[in-house]
Image 1 (tube, rainbow, N blue to C red):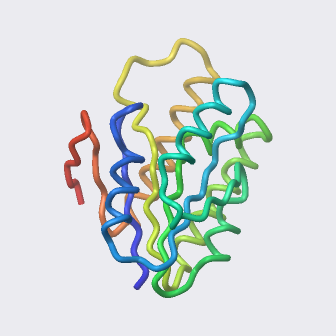
Image 2 (cartoon, rainbow, N blue to C red):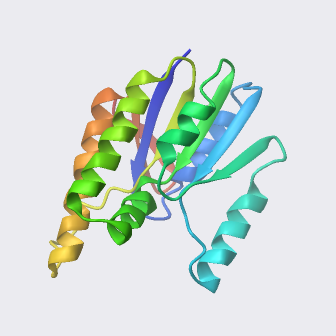
Length: 173
């Protein structure tokens, strides 16, 4: 049965661990981890490898920095779950590859895909970046605004929304 769960919170608050833990205890036969991170430097390569090693052998990792909607459509089947991790990096990837209209077009493709899913349960991990100070530069403000817009859109169609604070999940919806 199709279900969308949004998990948000600050950096290093336990969002990904929470999503993986819920899925690992959910009895799903097919588990997919859709990773948006790109190994652009040594530190990021090490992070990606560490995260990959933390998941059990029952997970299939699909790396996709841009066309996440294609991966979701490709695995939309019964008894299947995906963790999409994370929108924060995904928006950064989009901004580095295109202008705002191109980013908005990708947002729409992802939202339409989520609405059109028939069977897939998907846990979507994102950061809440709008709770701090107003960024000093235009690009960072645009990033915050775009991610906030996407988070709101996904939260509105999600079946459940959780805020992670210090490893504790608070159900918002």
